[in-house]
Amino acid sequence: GGYSPCSVSVLSTMSFKVCVCGGAGGIGQPLCLLMAMDPRVAELSIQDVAQAMVPAAGVSADLSHLDTACKVKGYAIDTAKPPKEQLEECLKGCHLVLVPAGMPRKPGMTRDDLFNINAGIAKGIAEACAEFCPNAVLALIVNPVNSVVPAIAELYKKWGKDPKKVVGVTTLDCVRASKFVAESAGGNAADIQVPIIGGHAGATIMPVLSQTTPKVDLKQDQIESLDKRIQDAGTEVVEAKNGKGSATLSMAYAGARLGKAVLTGLAGGRATEFAYVQSSVTDLPYFASNVVFGTNGVQEVLDIGELSEYEKGRLEEAKTQLKAEIEKGIEYAASN
Image (tube, rainbow, N blue to C red):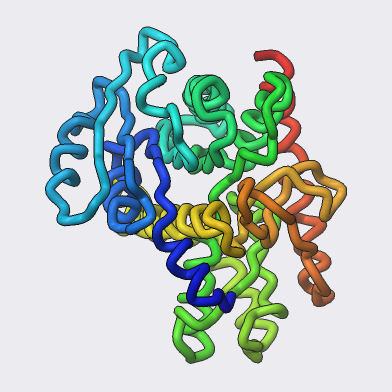
């Protein structure tokens, strides 16, 4: 938005403390790099487990040589003890905690296996955040996002904290959609915005191609093939990496974009990004749509707008799958 010159200087001099949990991992390292490059980030905590392939202290030593004003410090935790007992210094005073933590899905693992492991990891970090930085925005990049976000938001409620602080990062779906639409219809990907609503897995990822800005005229077969490609884009990367990883660099880019939107809001500006949050725009309690970030984090969750007939059908399909995945998260919170 158009800031007066006075507020521009205020926005650029606001300084924040950011933590990346899982900061020594495949997404974590490039995400730390991108956050350390943001002039508004005065302090960056890089947290990971002691058995990480690269120690958090190593990533922090590496980034501490950047010629920026950012102070970087690494924190390793012993997984035998609760994170809450080890992360006071790491998290105290944080404004934003980005969490690309947890295990990737291994061959032979069901989504349920993955959920139980990763919800446990996210819960440990959330307990520490609820204790040491309860007002920080907690941005989760922990799969399966559709279930982990409701689990952690419901736990925040249970602990007397604000569940609106818990945000699921779905930005990568929007980033990919911009690129794929530009490739399909022409135009510059950076100028094309595609709303992606619903969730962050499979059929729950619902591109609203009828609302692309600027307006892009797509034929029905283009719409259907783009819809499918946006849903399956993660698999393209997994296959190209030949079993040696998944989307890490594009995910870090997307996570940083969401992180920067949060910081702009906290600094008194207005920023919007699509994200998966507690919501009343549909009859589901959690849903991804366009979110306005302000001085408290999530300020407003915007409506999904007019949908085409094709999109109305897709929304029902997305909601059916998402409903079950949300329920799994809510059940986890109730029994933990």
